[in-house]
Length: 341
Image 1 (cartoon, rainbow, N blue to C red):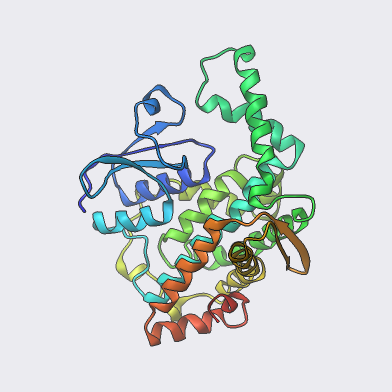
Image 2 (image 1 turned 180 degrees about the vertical axis):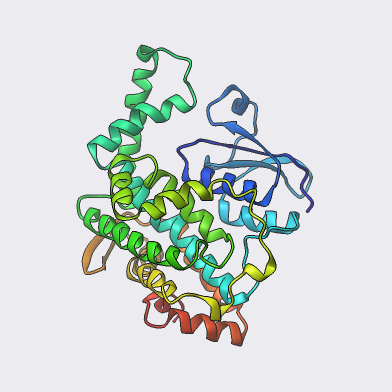
């Protein structure tokens, strides 16, 4: 279905998925109107069934404007609606690996993001004080104080939903440090994962706008361990002036040797979580209990991430024999292969 522009979306600066999608729109040169969450303008817009950020307002099959969420299918919808400056790799094997890394960023790196923002006292205090002002700057300190407290308490109370707790904290923190090392090594070989900007680049960037640029604890870790990543995040947010060509896409033979190290981190942490979570959801268990990177992991089951595993498996099953052989060669020995066994 053709989409008219400018697209309208509602979001917030502190939302990693908002930053992801604004980066996509800027790079693809898709005109848009950005509406701030909780603003008077947002109050006039249709409500989403599940209030997620960002929310786009797009026509349904009947032509009615409806609230639409979930960045991954939205990216694919925009690929069909707008020509040029694609962020989906041409090669089918590379396309699948891009999808896998986008999912890792959206669903695992976001655990790191939420943990660092709402687990440590200094980070909680900064987020609690600043985030509410993005929607309501024109109020007094006395007026906003009750909302700041309520907002902070609510977000801290949701730590368990994403899997952040005293048991899992070391797993999350170590995984972020390893990710920085693996991604830094990759960036030294190529500034984009697949030769030119792809959906996984924007997904990683979105989470890192929080981890690298806002939250004090993870920001300090990132700046110390990888100033390269810190700078990359700021560059990725505005790529409208980049002039990519089809030849810029990497084929399987162009991928640097560092890429497998990044996949190994996905296999170390995200793959075992996906399998354990899917099992817990199927059994209707109250808790996911497994071991990740040699340490215990405990959290509430998350039905959406079971769907993520299903979608990845559908994409893998849809590969032809040649592409699947290529994907299998990349995944071999990384730990990711267990997802598709």
